[in-house]
Length: 181
Length: 182
Image (cartoon, rainbow over all chains, first blue to last red; front, side, top):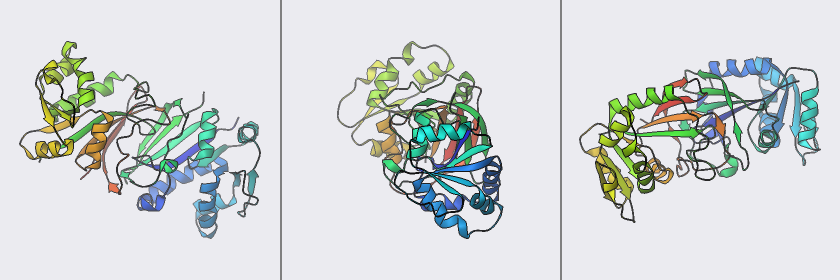
């Protein structure tokens, strides 16, 4: 059974979008090395439309191992509205998300990595399909956005088990939790 | 200038109170509690508290035993209350600070003394955070997400850099994160 590993950047005040306002200053070699480790343990990327759009417009033009891996790996875009993905190796999940992801998890393979904690991740969390939640807590109050830009979500309630904590030189703390039973 | 410390339990998604203004997400971690409170008792000599949280705490600490209870009871408590009056005599060493809470805390910080700590409630902390009066956040990240509830950061409307002072995990799965704001 494959694991769904959600890995998300978040400010201390819980903002997950508008990353241009708070995240970019924290990109360094250490962050990229950890992100690369997560990619190496995975052979598919599951993305909601928001993250997919941002990624599809930035990663194809980049170079380096991180970019090569992201560009080459299988991508699943969960969206009921998008018709074509437009980025290499994209499969669109149009039907029932819970059903489709359950099937994906039953397939053979490495982890399915998920970047971003929007509506898709929250649906998976509500349905007990998210196995690992790794939050990169940034030492900043972003002070931006609305409820939709936050890590918050109606009816998302889970007890977690702490698996790993790392402190990066930039002040980011990564908190990895096991989410599903 | 005295430092203002926010000392609080939070969820992984950043709430200091759950959907029903509850604290059901809290895990008991005596080791973390001992470490943080002994640090706190060595730096803080005054407690700032909102009216409602004051009444909750006054219903617990006077009858409690142990070093922390002795410290909580002996330490001066400044009770913020914009409108309603509070009978501060229900808990020893408490004084009422009426009017605008941020103004009161600004004055308190400018007076002489050691660190000032606030434990809550949510509205009080949120207003002190919004007024940019907080110098340190001592947060116990509990291993739970609750989706919605009360956040102390909701009224922050500009980017503010923080400095991570320490991060330490404990047996219960709780993580103590300490940030300074300057």
